[in-house]
Image (cartoon, rainbow, N blue to C red):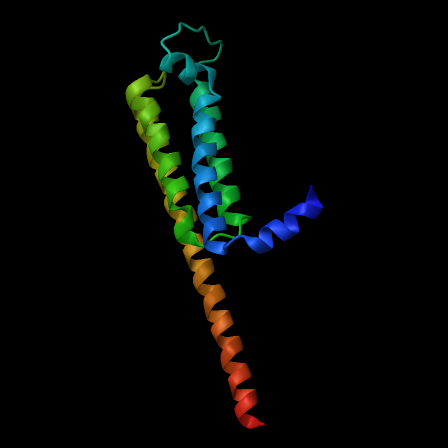
Length: 152
């Protein structure tokens, strides 16, 4: 399988690759919600008894946090290609709270929402800064090569 990925990657347009990965990340965010037994049961109106109901939001938030962090740090995508995943992650949690309900108090829910959007905002801002630094470094490299060519 790994041998066949190389030729496949060379044949794919980088823009299409970025868009595909971005959409796949948004689907992963949806899967984080659907893997939660509490929210899945509430979605299909099934009665479920949960031993520690306060942890259901924690698991969902931590899963979305991991997805956001990994996508911003390890994936070779430009910052604006991560926007669909960021929007999906933030608003899926809000959707769950508003339409499916939460065991947490209103204060805890508000804190979780603010912290989720702060995480998304800071991760996006950091990725944007990193992209700008890469572009500046590339421009400096081009300038140095131009100066060397002119000197010769």
